[in-house]
Length: 306
Image (cartoon, rainbow, N blue to C red; front, side, top):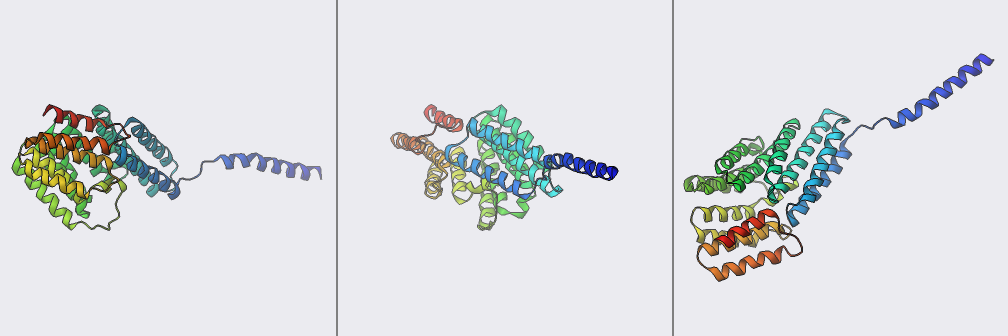
């Protein structure tokens, strides 16, 4: 009898001791975690569209990337693991873009290199294109225009450009800016024409990540204004700027402010100085309440020097 009681008591104690260990075991990370992280990424994208790049946004994006990488260690499946790597790539690309917009080139370069690696781990060609797109912009800011063209061409070779003409258009448009900075008129207009042709084929109801919501007819018009101004067609650039500002959605406040400053530059290049100054003043009204991102301050410096 005592032996039976001993065995029963021992079994009960063993089960009780095991319960905390089972409860403490990490749960398997699944779709719910992926959705939560993606919503956080969308929130950062919305903040960027309104305010532009700044250090707090960059740090929040890096924290999101770190969380995604930590969660992938406990992913419930290989598919979830790849999706988490993809999210880490996009969070890191958001940090890179914030640094680009804030004119923190060295930090941006490091983030982009990391994001490209993570995009490969996640087998995500959209994230890969996003990185090359930002690489092209960073190279232009640094005055490395040949590298900007090469980054645009790298974006063109990503798999997503064969599936979705909108991404093909963005890659061509970014390449056009690189050519225009090199004063390669033929190359710039050729790439710009290809961007326009591809965009006309893009489906408006296609499901795409939130970071690319800025790109469409309005943004291509804004890019056309930059290209035309660079290659010596300020009147055509001014017309494109006016059309862009009529079409850029209100929530893209930073982009509207940049397009306004580009309009002022095209007016200045036509020696319409009073109108150019008045237009540049509208940019400050658009960004009222927010510090100007470094990229915008730099462009404003170009305006005052010109």
